Image 1 (cartoon, rainbow, N blue to C red):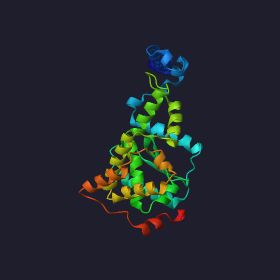
Image 2: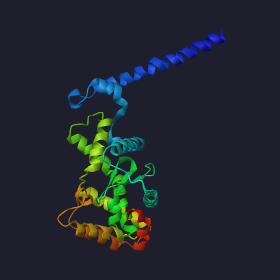
Image 3: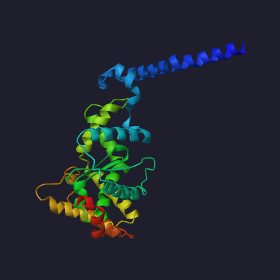
Image 4: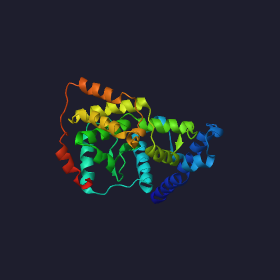
Length: 287
């Protein structure tokens, strides 16, 4: 009798897993569908039923979802035109700098991933979930580690300030991709890839990324003057042809001036990372 009773409960649990929980998923999917105007959704009821778990609400995205989204965007980027530089000395060097800055991060649940892109253009960008990309051309353009660290810190500033997520949300709404339920994951990945290549941040976002980046730079004991000198160098080198780093980072004309004023106002200034000889030795494979 006891054996039959155990078998009964075992079969009952199996039935719950097999039929009850999928039924709940379908009911939830239908409830989302019928409480959201279909005309505003842009995808069918079956998309919601079978892909409902992949719908992300960017206004309330969790750290776990952000990390997963960033990983998917990274995978798509690496399958397209982004080619990583494979030299271990350079990659380890960039990771050391990034990890040093990451120690000052306020988003402790977001692990940073620093990658070197094999591209001679002077550029750097960040996507969601802690992914930061630095071009080999930008590494060669810097004169010292403090200058390079300032660029990495600036890109981290966009992630720290949630600028990447905010921009994805604004773009999704403008294009009619967002619904009351959120945005489909695959569309977000495509959007993230596109914005990774062309990310026209607002002046407010750029200034905040500068502020956050400068604080991370200084708190890591790097010379904050490195951020000013690198920006001044880019502006003087650009001439009529603006480097991608500046063209995708629209800034006010007085950017160098406000950076310098912030540095002057700081009481404690580190002086690490200014040796050109040490820097050239660290990036020797690129020279």
